[in-house]
Each structure stands twice: as structure tokens, then as C-alpha cells.
Image (cartoon, rainbow, N blue to C red):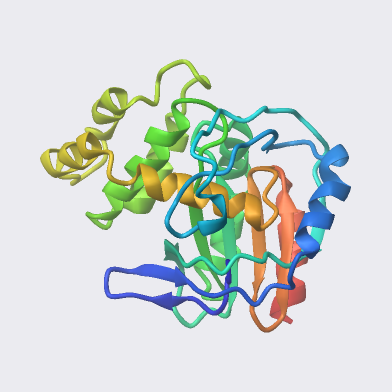
Length: 262
């Protein structure tokens, strides 16, 4: 993934283009830190996804729900390696030069903790002030409900309500793997998102057309060293990126962001 300077498209999507991250060092970093990660979910034994953007994975057609373990949080200077383009709506000023890119699972309780306790301060101090852009990329690692929840975010994005959906789902997060995130349950939940055209939204959900995008993004996340959720990359193509894993407190993000902004 290159989280190079992001380009804003006409529908306010961001194209995260070709990676300038350092080659395969992330694999080494991921192995080194896996025994010291806590405050997030770890992606364990994940089978490669078959997508036409991941030629090397095409012979592996089966996938399974990954093993989830708890480990210590870590912060590491990193360089993801994928060259796959990713489309993600962002919050913030187009002129902001620093990117904050979170990979999260809508079922992950640690992601909710980050959303509740840390992201409001990040938004207030860095996004709303034009210093940084924030992007959320939903992936599927926690269980069966994770895929519909993430795929549905792109249906909301069709109506320019990506972050309205994102916020609403985290505020109303249910117990993991309890069935609260099926497509039918999402239809009921989403009725409370203001000005969401439910007929259009439900047609999109029924088509399941964004499931391949979510599996593609999930594979991408493993390629660039995401071993659990939440995982956040901060930086840009010029200065490189720092990876923060787990639901770290605001001060950790503040210290990292200030190093890039100075």
C-alpha cells in the first residue's frame, strides 16, 4: 500500500496509491512484535484471499476466520510494502500533509475504545485544525459479523455517509460474534442514521457487492504488517510512516503526530 500523498476524488474518496514504504522490513517488525502486543486484536492464522489484485494469492481459494489472541501494544517505525491502490474516504482538509490511517474491525472492542477515548481528541487537535487527514479502513478479522459490517460501510459511502455509518456502528456496537452485525440487523440499525436512503442502502446490502473489497483490504492489511486491530499508520510518503498498534492513549498519538508536523 502506498500511503503516499492522498488524492481526493470527486466523490471524496481518497486513493492511497503506490507504496513508497520500505520493502519487506514490515514482515520482520511484525514477527518481532507479535509477542508484545496488547490492547487490540491480533490477526493470527489467516488464509490468503483470492482477488484479481493479488495474483500471488490466487491459488489459495479458501479462507477462514483468523485466530484471535491478546498481546502487548507496540509502536514501530514501519514501511508497508503493498502496491495495491486502496479507496478510503478521509476526514480533514485536503491541504493537510500528514495522514492518519486506521485499520479497524467494526466488532473489535479495542477499536471502540480508541473511537471513544482517543479519536475525539485527535480529531479536535489535528483533523479539525487542518494539520492531518484521518482515514478509517474496515477489515474483517474478529468473526462472521465483521465482513457484513465492513462491507456495509461502503454502501453508506455511496451516499456520502461513510463516517456517519462508522460513528453510528461504533456507538451502537454489540457483543462480538453475537449476530448483531448480520445484513438484516444492519438494515434495522441503519434506519437511525439521519438522511440515509434506506431503499438504496438495502439494495446495496442485498447485493453484497463490497464483500470482495473488504477481503481485499483485509489481505492488504496483512501484507503491510497489520497483525491486529486497531492498527494506525501516521506519516506521509516523504517522511515515512510510524505504526501504532492497539488502543493507545491520546498522548501516544500526540507525540507521534507532533514529530511529523514540526
